[in-house]
Image (tube, rainbow over all chains, first blue to last red; front, side):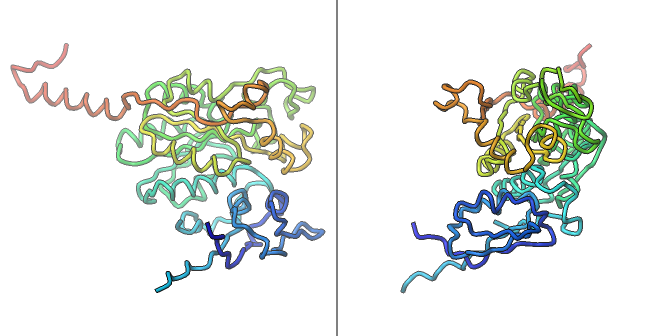
Length: 74
Length: 278
């Protein structure tokens, strides 16, 4: 099966409470955390779209955006 | 799926729960399961009692009732009896479901009324400052047990099963895909469904009981549980079983009540031929 194309990983910093669940359990180390616990998307190209961060986030602050499905060849 | 935000009252976000609280993950999974079942928001009623878990009702854009401590199932029973066509969800904490509302819980299960209960079990009264609850268990530190608790815990799954619930399952906030699947099955089940979700309270349970970090508590859910029927569970009997424990069909309460109404109406319409029961 083709890998799903991720367009963007959006973190809502206003809702995020910096618990560290996303960065700890991400299997591909997509996130980076600074000294204050703020999480940023450092390696979006490594994302395998497992959605673990989005589903585990207790603050509902992570959202994966997908590329629209490619049109079938004529 | 539809966007998560379309199910939320976003004006109340960010929510009130502490950083790392598992209840937000349950809210997350519940929205996904409601979307998977394909329910319209207008067909859903969420009834909650008191406690951190009960605050879920405030964030969801369904019909919601925030009621008395432990009494959510009494209100939910009233809603369901008057409008059996609606889908009823009742989020409860371990104290709300098994202590303050313990009698409502077992009797709703006994009647097999079509309500889905989600027991968010964090083994502590978080909102009131960390008192031990009926699921804390022996050896747990709490503000009301500074020298550790000597109380045996309730097993919510066994209690619900013995009381007559016709769908009983358990998962954790670590097993998020399983959470969505079990909640989806519970909502679809016609009868009284109970899904116990082991949820972490880092503020009041974790800190006092050797877990400084939220992620440690989640790892504990991963390592301390196993799927029912698995080899792992057979070999390590001290693990907590996860999965579906009861899934059976039994007459549902509102269906039976509708039949009572029909019998009563038939008796009246029958006149002399159909006397009312003495």
